[in-house]
Image (cartoon, rainbow, N blue to C red; front, side):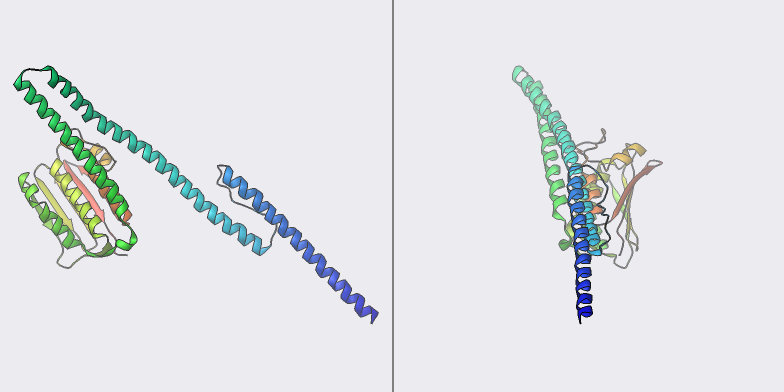
Length: 297
């Protein structure tokens, strides 16, 4: 009987000892996680939390925290890029607004000093033109940020790209005719269906057609394939390969283009990419092309 009692006592002591060791190791792992977590939050490092123990629960805890840390770092980088982008936007807006405002103020001073009706009319014409440029800039800025913020996954639906493209071309018919541009359109008989935001798609097509109105030498070819590939092309003697590479950049303008703030194609690019599409531009042998693709998946 005594032997059995001592046996159970030894077993209990062994269990308590094992539990004490396990608790000690878990406490050690917890302190390691705590110390490293503080370090990862305060230091600019991409290293992950590592612990010396092999307890599967503490290892899982460390792995879960590492996932959250990676997400936090990604959000931090996105926030930093956003700050840089805001600073860049503010600089560009300041420059774009200052230029016409400076011209307006200068011509207003000249207008005050002149007594010649002919000169006064000329100054007023310049002031009116610069005021219109300011109005256009502020409108495009509003449309840019409104369009960027308006898209979310809940606003997607099955869209017939053929129909949307036809509607946009029809809406620009008068403007195209005024620029003596007769578009050549090629679309498949069967509808090309994609899960997209209709308003965003219309904005993309509209901005590209507006771009053609600015730069086309008198032609515009538009084709839609069964695979969801859309190609806009036109002769554009005022553009070159460098322009094609820069036209998607926000606020980039081609000096020869009138009333252009450079936001149209930037909006088209951002909206296309928000809907997981692809958009590229190119220029070769005097022909400017914009290619858009929306996959069916």
